[in-house]
Image (cartoon, rainbow, N blue to C red):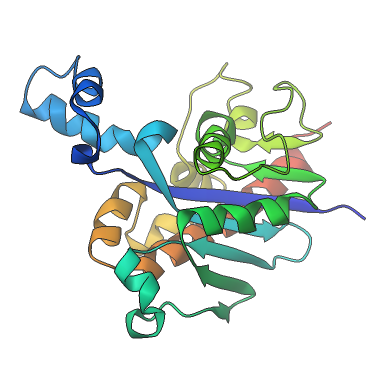
Length: 231
C-alpha cells in the first residue's frame, strides 16, 4: 500500500552571540552596513549551521491525517501545561512539543515508513536542513531526502516541478495557491518571516498551526500537479 508523506519545516536563526568571534567574522564578511548586518542575521534561518528547527509537519497524502512536532524554550518545555503546549489533536493533526532533537526523532520515525514524499522547495531548503540538523544533533536519518533530482518517483519537490527544474520563474507557495484557487496558508496574515518573532514571544502554537496550514496547501497543490501535469 502506498504511503506518501507531505512535510514542511519552520526554522529560526540561532542567537548571533552564540557564535565565536571567528564565526561571526565569517558570517559578516560581506555585510557593509547596519542594514547588511541585519539581513545576514535574518538569513541565518535558512542554513543548518546557523538555524534551529522549531516545527516539523507531516501529513499522509492518502488519509490527510498527520502531526506537527514543534519546539519551545527550555522554560516552556519544563512547564508545558502552564504554557499551553500539552499534546493534543485537532482536525486530524496531532501536536507534540519537544526539544529540537526530540521532534527530529519523531520525524524520522514517520519517514521510515514513507514510500514517497512531497515538499515545496524541499531540495533547496527542508531536506538539507533536516539531514544536516539531524547529524549535528546525533540523530540518525531513516531516509535519504536527497535522491536523484530529475525523477519524481520518490521525492516530488513541487517548486522544482512548477518551474520545470528552474527553467521557468519561481513563485512562492502563497502565490501558487492563489493562482490555482487553493486556500493559502498565509491567509491568516502569518508568513515564514514571522516565525522568529512568534517564537521569541512564546507563541509556539501559532507556529505549529501555521506549519499545519502549509501541509494542507502543499497537499492540494500536489494533487493538482499529479492530476493535470504528469504524463
